[in-house]
View 1 (cartoon, one colour):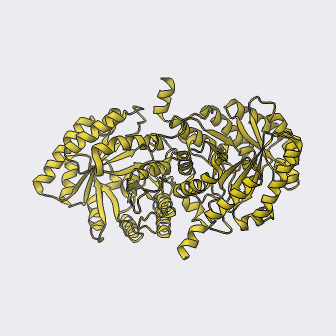
View 2: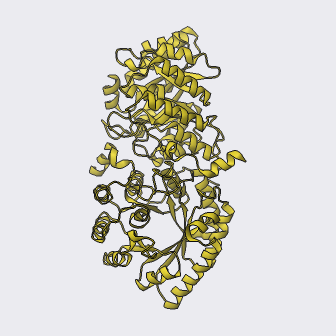
View 3: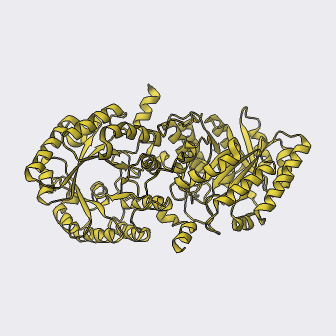
Length: 314
Length: 314
């Protein structure tokens, strides 16, 4: 059997630049620019976008306009707009706003969980139960997805035990999450580790294992995406221009760049619905809005291969 | 069956910085620095190095000291020193010098072959036959390897037909090559294409399909290495700091960086025999010798993950 025989024919790239990207840069992008960004992203074919975060505005002034940005996203037909919610209060805002999806982060690393959320993983799991109860009490259709961050290691704690990740995934699903994702928050994963952890989680989560989130800190994000793709994962987070660096690795790149991922899938004849040229144009605007911030990615510089342009014309 | 079940436990990273790297930069590195580079590379555990090219010195003054560099490399016990030879004359110099291996480039792209070597692929195949005859007449033990360049596409011609690659491989082996490699000279390959082309060539070449050579022009080199690794390929070309850009894509990165590849394999528990810290130290020297030239790679900036450092101490 060929190693490519079972690759999916279509995948979703979920854009996280407006949340994961913007929360980690100092620049505050004006709301009007965010709406232009959303419109251009939609026009480029993006249909799954994490648009903001329902954290207290004083903690994250970059995302203080979350309700307004979400409301605009909801006017774009067919767009799944998700928002990050760190706790029940955030979830209530997401439910009030009828977001398509709310994303709750949970660190598999105990040390990172305490440092980042000031809660142990089991306390976050309890909060997920409360969020699920709140949603059910409203008979809301907002989806509840939990992103297991630092699933492949942590800059504070170092190694994260895969068995602890499996335990947390089970508990999160038992607490009522609809879907989960595995995140290499700090760029520690390699393709073997990705394969082995996804293979360990799939028997527990099945199709509820939804999304892979890979940072490109050490240049391995695309290799890691390929490893997950081979296991049938069909949703990947990415941010335009790779924004969203890791605060613990200054100068290192952050999320895998949307345009690089869109290029790789297009080259592999896997549909994403995203238009490369329009992504590059949007990247140009983002570069203006984030002047002085570090941008990443590879394909924008080299351009598309001649062979691909020939196929597009054929 | 797990996708990682059959990964090799040991691979060879063949360093090509001293040839593929230096031939594409304007700076002429003094011979003494090249010998220091070789000594440090050897000390970092490198045992397979393409040390220079036997092209006419007037065409490539950067590599005019090929005999001297090769002679020094041959004093390092256990080091396999290979040299590029473009034709019979170059091969005669390699045979005179008793190189361990001579590497003949052959473009699968007809257009690239004419532009680069001023010969059609079939004329290069005929020359390979003459090189093999010359070696046999001397009863030499110098190995004859042919690198099939532009095997995944070409900046001049665009698409390269995989069936033409298979035809060329067969002809090259019939002409007497001991081993062949497949090269993505311009960074066009993706993991699906790598898998499919290697799967097409393996039935023809078997274990004589020796090495994968991937450029990182669009950030896909490590993903492509992983795809080839899954098929049992255990030799990969790389250059320290990723030197060796593609002349047709200015500013774009060239070869996959040795230190990135060494890191990926170490993270995957695959032995390379190379010492990461010593590679990074050598990278620093190369940066001095090539001041002003574009360097590449990711891991040197971010450093090793804490989880890996913990394992090293355990």
